[in-house]
Structures are given as structure tokens and as C-alpha cells.
Image (cartoon, rainbow, N blue to C red; front, side, top):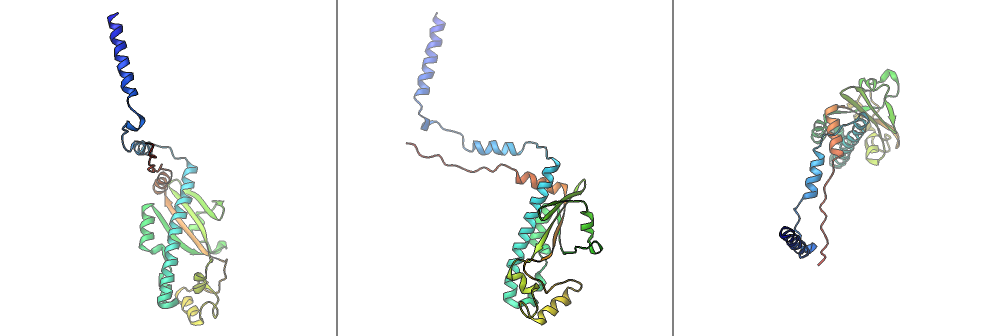
Length: 231
């Protein structure tokens, strides 16, 4: 009987103590949600073959879009400074330091090729890509167990592209057209029109880089949400 009274007294005291604490007086540990999400990101996840193909597209789109953005900015600057003769030396975005660093990070080897629709002129990379499934305008595939392939067309869409690849006598001078043909023998460097396919981006990616890109792309991102002031 005495023991029962003692237990009742302790239980009553605990209830009174909890009742005395208002919600705004409860102190929570900071960053608990962030810690939980980081813990989930460190969990071992199984990446399926289709996941790697999706990551190949994501990585290819990211690298080539970044390279194209740098190319447009660079060509606009060099055209303003010295015309076609000066800008022509900068029309290799795959060799830009920033693009090369990004490609190395994801274990990718990017290249740009002129569009060659005939089998006789197919590049080694295009031959290696034989049998790939079309993905809208892209080709995404896995020619080997540890190798992935990405290809998408380069389309002439802007006046900036026409400034170098357009019609001689209209978009660029005859002298500029001759200079480009001399610098790029065997390629149809000029005489293009808006909407034409100029060439293609082709990337060969290693499995480690593709898997890392998939992991980064699918990680949970913690955002701080401030609680409203209630009292």
C-alpha cells in the first residue's frame, strides 16, 4: 500500500512537470532534420542499370549545356574584340579548362564532331554506339560493362552561330568564309542555315563517374525552414 502511494506520487509529479512546459519552452536539438537526411544519403543504395542510363543522360546534358554556355559567351566576347578571325581560335569548348575539369570530375571524355549521316563517314565513336536506343534527339547507351555513351545533335539556332557558319556575303564576308574553310579543311564550316544540324556532341563516360553523378543527382537536399513565431 505504501509502495503504491509512492508510485502514484511520482507519476503525479511527472505529469505536473510536463504540464508546466509549454510547446514554445521545449528546446529541440538544432539540425536534426539535416542530420537525418545526411544519414540517409550515406546509406548504401543499389543502382539499377536503367538508373545508370538516366544518369548518363543527366551527365551528358549537364556537361554539354555548360560547354555551350561558355562557348556562346566566349565567342560573343571574341567576335566583338577581333571578328571571326579571332573568334575562330576559341571554337573548341571541349578543350576549355572549365569544361575539361568538369568532364574529368565525372570521368567523361567529350568531343564535338561534324554531323556525318552516311555510314562511310561514321566516326569510331558513332560505330561504337551502333545499336543504341534513341532517346528523343539523344543517343544513350552502354556499349561495354563499364562504359556509357551519350550523343546529341548541335543545332544552329542563333545569330551568333550564323556569324561564323552562315551564308558568305550575308552573315560573314567572303574573306572570313575563306579563312574558316582554310582552318577547317574537309568540313562544311560555312553556308549553313538556321535550324540545320551542325554536328554532334559525343561523350564516353566511365561507370564510376556515371554512378557518382546519379548519387549526387538523387541526394536529398536539406533546406532550413524557420518556424513561425507563435507567442
